[in-house]
Length: 325
Ligand code: ADP
Ligand code: MG
Image 1 (cartoon, rainbow, N blue to C red):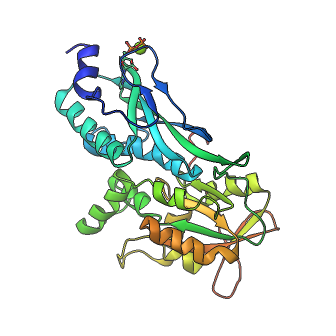
Image 2 (tube, protein in one colour; image 1 turned 60 degrees about the horizontal axis):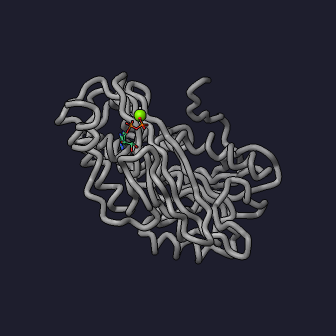
């Protein structure tokens, strides 16, 4: 099977005319037709074998995750997904692998009406790079995109869904921790099949003052938001300890805190909103079908503190993942 046959067989699909896409796969460029009164939101994420996933991972889950991590960036910006490109480096044209990968990829793409419009295919070590394109309305000259820089002192800090379970699964798969089979199964789902919070991102437009998605662990990612917004944060330890979905008794409160703060691969949204918007935030979560938890608030004192139930700072620092650290 040659390069073009591979593209035709696995990635080129009979195209129903999708909104926003004027020309899809097959020419030198795809053409997007932006909706009048919108800005385009663009993001790329690369997944490298051995670094972001295990060589033996289920290809269907990998197809899902490769797109999910990109859609998560659109969600964090409050953007509606429109299209994506796929740059793929493959060691060989393994048909079973390609069929599984395409199945996982397109199931998620179709669920979000996000069209594959092009890409590149070469032979080489397994490497998957997706670029997504989304739309955000501009109203009265003002973009409705959610940025990292809009948080204000006094705002509440919120996260969606559950945190820490993906890291728990990673530890188990790396042999650092032994988990009961049913616990591993649930945690592994979170690692391998994250759910991009696209609907929540859309519902938070006009409510959240700042937002980002959590890919490298709450402590480090929050650090970026604090830096962009020039403020600090006080987090509540009890709220953080409640965030892992894992009901396993073998997890201490300290374990939970370090999984939540230093974990990664959560692909949940972290966002700020004024206290007056608490009901609106909960309503946005309900509309999007995802729980939202208030984890603390933004303060003028720079840096990040984790407070116990008495309001006293807990010792310990928590690092997030940095590829070059
Ligand atoms: P060029 O050499 O002009 O960059 P290619 O010959 O690499 O184009 O690709 C032919 C067409 O197939 C292009 O429209 C390209 O966008 C598309 N394509 C290539 N690889 C992929 C892929 N993995 N997924 C989707 N479309 C792809
Ligand atoms: Mg090419």
